[in-house]
Length: 502
Image (cartoon, rainbow, N blue to C red):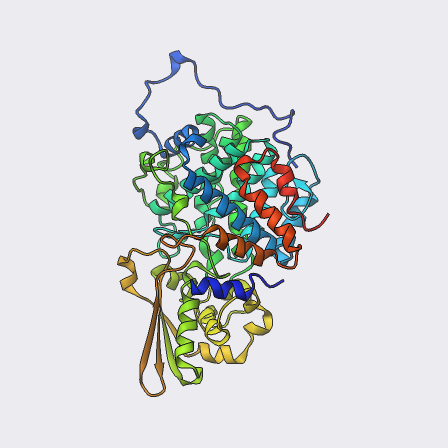
């Protein structure tokens, strides 16, 4: 199925384990007796995992303002639409089949079906679907990430725990806050340590899932240690020739985060101090950084979810501006045979991820192509846009595109490092056969901070993603129910309305 449809893209560019069943005790680590406890330390002096746990424990629905609640609903709807669009993709089907092969139960809905799996496996299957097309949201901080990947875990655990709508929405806002704040604090990326961004989903999911499970502060801190210690993902996922795992890595992080919270609830303790320890996160994964939970979202302080954007195109975040820049430049030039050379200026991470490997000039998989700036620029210039059909096997082998890509170079544009941006910019510079140079710079996109998506924008993208699945009337009814997420009393029934098959 081709998703999203080009007309939407053009408009946008223009503007089973039961809920820890009776056989597993709902135990948490028992505190020592008061006589053996050391004097309490101020929160600011405690290990980071404890500070994050304290923030998670203290966050309440009442701390969320109307704008934050609206953004949670926007990102839930967008993620579900992306997941339904990817339902038939082979890697998504594999993940779903594996999750469901372990037997049905009273766990959590596997989106697009009426069947359930254990919460950690439902998280895995659903996050794989949300992420696969590379069309879900993005956060642009010190590095970039996809915090909506964590929604799958929140939905699964909330359903399994029979959580209220308010508890679900609070958990989603919490997952976003932890993920985005850690993205701002730590660069685990390719050019530095060589780890993958889903590393930062581990504590985010562990805390959000743990909060839905009503863990104590200590239980939440234990869940962070259990999630982080054994599940650090390598950035080989995103370099050279990319595999199916590119769209699945964060699903695995979500699965591990949920399972860690389940273990912590049953009383298992985790390595500590997981960040500051002799062989901890700061030693092996990322340089130490100041993380002040006092600046995290709460009443009177904006939540990071407000700064997240929705993608227009199914491609790496740095390519979101490449497509409209390429379309505009191609329209001005007309005959693309006149182009003697094309330079793509991008951010440092854009160069590392999507413009430095030789495989990006001859992508032979969708996963490599949607992380290839040369391919995306060429395809957008020849086709006037980009959609999921742009990665069909015959298009990857298109001799016109392969020839044109040999004219393309990608460079880091150092000017972008000092810009305040709402999305990673792209500067295209074409040198024509008569020596003239034409340049197009795109540094803003609809759907990102400064130009947030409206409800109409969100609904248009959702309609595009599910087109052909249901009658439009049913889609409208589903959207109406999803916009009322904060008032729903039956999450399983709401998710069952998304079923594409029995």
